[in-house]
Image (tube, rainbow, N blue to C red):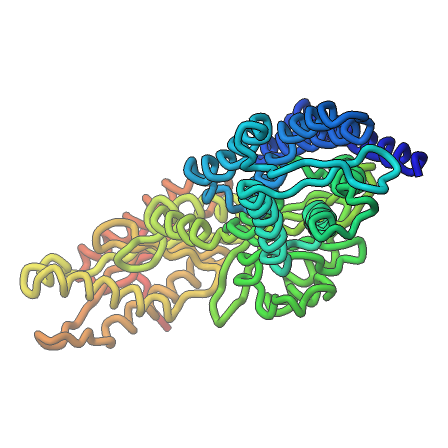
Length: 530
């Protein structure tokens, strides 16, 4: 029997060593886990308790055993409260850890320590301590005092609360953290079970099994720290960060099947829910459009890629920046990839609006003067390089000032919009149409000869004359004067070509308006259709 006690002492001593190593390892391990200090206190208190208990088992006199019991209570009362605090940090409830809670959790253990060391004066903790009969070694039994019940209630309450918190978060915990939660739950359950068996006097010779159980839980903690990253950031904090991200995140395995996703991704991808776990990535993107599905199907999981895609969702068009990056294991091997979806719709629409403001005339919806000149210079150069014709038409609304004076500027704006609508009916897809200034408009006709440009101008003139603008103040008849020119030599500056068309336009105004004149470089002639 004495050999059994000796073996028990050895196991308890090993448990103390493991607890001490845990405390030292956690102390020197710099991490962002907010519950690290509570874990250190719990491990250090466990080491003090188990070492003192091993010495209690080796004691031979009542005085010696009482001393080691007193040393046990420098550690044992603080284990359960510290473990509860660590679990609260682990599950993301650190906001509930207030000064009042800390005072409550640690004031009772502190009082217990004082009462144990002064028990002979009041017997509030132990009513009596005596040697157990028929024991193979000097083992003691106790008669509980009132404060023993208070301390025991706190200890069991903390362990039970810790287990309940873990079970509360279990269903919402990411799969990657379930092993850590299981280990922490085991670290609470086994000591609680051992303490219960001890209080029910169901252990061999009434010996406390908790220090032996702690050798198992300490081993599990060491394994979790070294292999599962247990003392890094709290998983709930990671999960909260993952879920609170505005960007959508998809985590895929090596087969490009969905492993995990966050709430933002579920809002972006139609049909993305828990049932989508295990589905291929291409299927997830298919509702967003063929372009998005083709992109993810053809991208390499081992490469970091980024692309902006047009997204079709709920009958509207959105724009997403899709980033794909590989996910590596600790040994550097590929574990899958992460797809990040960044909604850039607002930015893209703003850029389009700014581009429109920079290139489009706000009143008429056609190119402004600056953008028209920019595009026309490019097309004129292309025409010169390919030896193809290039013509320009200038038109000016006749007597536009009188419209503003008679009807007001509101009707003047309507007149300009009416002119633009008439012109658009006669333009080809490649023609460049811009507002040159005020009531003057300009058209560039790549590939059109001077006679073809004159025909276009005549059709616009005739259509405009016949298209009456209906207003609340009555019908308004509009006409315009036209001037056309063709680039006859290469290279010819756009400004020179515009000047020739302007001279032709001026001839139309001097000769009765509502006509088309052509500039052939050396001379200006009126265009006569037919």
